[in-house]
Length: 228
Image: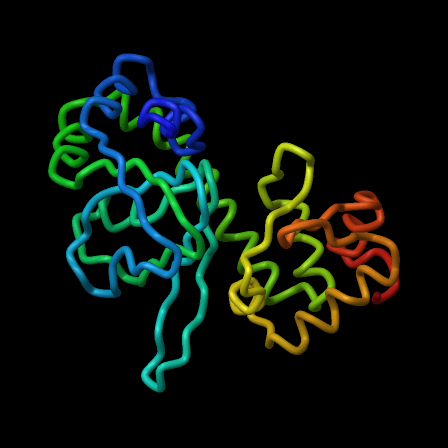
């Protein structure tokens, strides 16, 4: 099993945090395990703290008045969730569910907030990680506004974290990715199949996607090539 130090060391949010501040984070962290399908927290509950995914996958989603869910983002190893609520000291604005068996490191909110108040180098180090997160959010907005379905899927695959064999691991329920990209399940499946038929990607084992032609896929993401 991964240790909290290994999980935190692989987290993009803390890559620029000084060693002494990192040790403080590691000392307060504890492991949190979730089974597949387990709710981690629900929208408007008190924020437990910052979760850092070490293994597995978590979907963070909002639920509309009619019960329809929209996936805000899918968090894999190295990613974080509930960080904004922990930083701001407010209730979680969305729900989180383990898409598969997941192991996280949890930085409890009271201790995390206290560290931020007392440790200026920690704050400065985290600004770098937060700026990357803001850049990611801008990219999501760009996807919805400026890219067609093929461009959104292509960009998602190119930006996704790779497995040891260079593949992209998709959730077992691909509708989570479709929702995240603001696409219907039907549109996602149809467009995904066109990318396969065009020879840009292929399907491996356990919902792993192999990027066969990365430059051509990047051109699709940028809208340079004709529509797939």
